[in-house]
Amino acid sequence: MVNGIPALSSAHICLGVCTYQRPQMLIRCLVAAQRLAEPIGTRLSIVVVDNEPYPAAAELVRAFSDQGRPMHYVNERRRGIAQARNAVLEKAAELRADWVAMLDDDQLVAQDWLLRMWHSARLTFADVVKSTVQFEMPEPRPAWALSEPKPKGWKLGLKITQTNGVLFRANLQGSDGSPLRFDTRFALTGGEDSDFFTRAIAYNNARMVLTPEAVAYEHLPATRLTFAAQVYRCYCSAHSGTQREVEHRGFARTAATKSVKSAGAIFKAIFALGLAPFVALSSKQSARRKVLRAGKSVATAAGIVTGLLRIGAPQPYRTIHGI
Picture 1 (cartoon, rainbow, N blue to C red):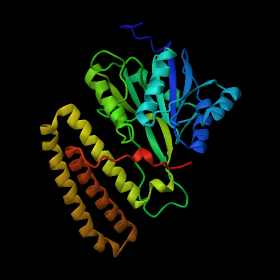
Picture 2 (cartoon, rainbow, N blue to C red):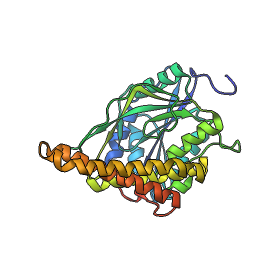
Picture 3 (spheres, rainbow, N blue to C red):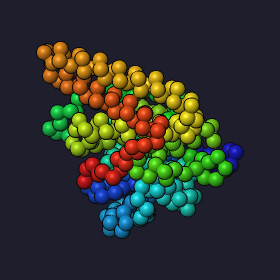
């Protein structure tokens, strides 16, 4: 025991999976979760939070529990991804977990994913470890699915991260010393995870790292890869990110930095659109990429402005992608 924190060699890990009306994706995710190897000297509990008004996935989770590693089922009826993630944390506290891991229901991980996450935590003395995310594209590939993220290396001193493949200490605290929880104001807007880990740094001096050793594979349905969906995602990210920054840095400082970024985004959009007709002469694919880049830049600028003005709040979590 060090400063009241259980030693890494004898800890209880709680893996949380939040789901909403995507039973087929959930099945794929839980099959992978059942196969996870436990790091030596630890024990693993799995919690599935169903964010439905009724226990839609209860039987599915019970079937997995009967066939393999026991799973805990929680029906969180209050609609919102922040509420669902908080339900994971409440269950983890009830189970007296020392660490919490989270995966999205559209993700798959290899059998050694938790081992690699655990090794990364021990290697770097991190309070929060984020796995690398690789995207699985649908086939045939949609016309606007133009690029794939490049593999990432180690990133120490991470300043912001998400919950789609993460491991963190369960004893993180809020500003008043109470257990840190996700802000329910972000229930349907997204950005609740970035806000959570920003506060983890601010109030706990949490050390966060990105590891290339552990990879979470995220399936992208075709509906997430349309031009409109990708542009809207950029708008949502810019809007929620701007509001988070106002909360933590104040309006004046945020407006000063974000205004420059917004203007830069508009310039990039104009530049990309201006090049597109010429690029199209040699490559329609490259021209399409320029147009998409322009659309994303405009959406980013719009999200910054509306985020500063606190208008036009998006609610991307009202739309379900995948089944």
